[in-house]
Image 1 (cartoon, rainbow, N blue to C red):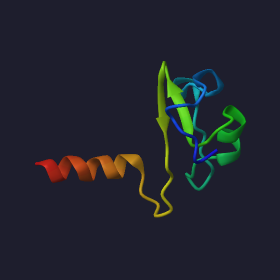
Image 2: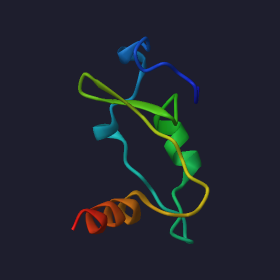
Image 3: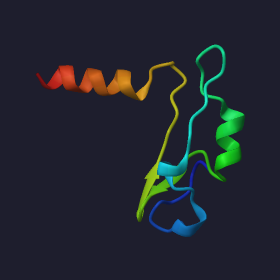
Image 4: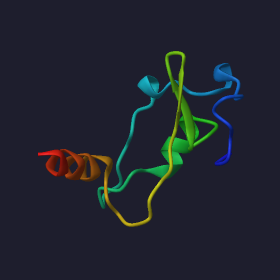
Length: 75
């Protein structure tokens, strides 16, 4: 489901990101099994009527880390 085309995906088949609750493991990692139980596609969600596609990095940087770097670069 990683390569779904966001322009043609059936929005009603996607989980609304606002309803997803992220649990963490003892090592403070995202509990992937719990996340998979809440959605049918780990790479594509919706927020209301907007389709959002995710790509997961393997380098350990969080969204907050990357956002902070973007903000610092624009200063």
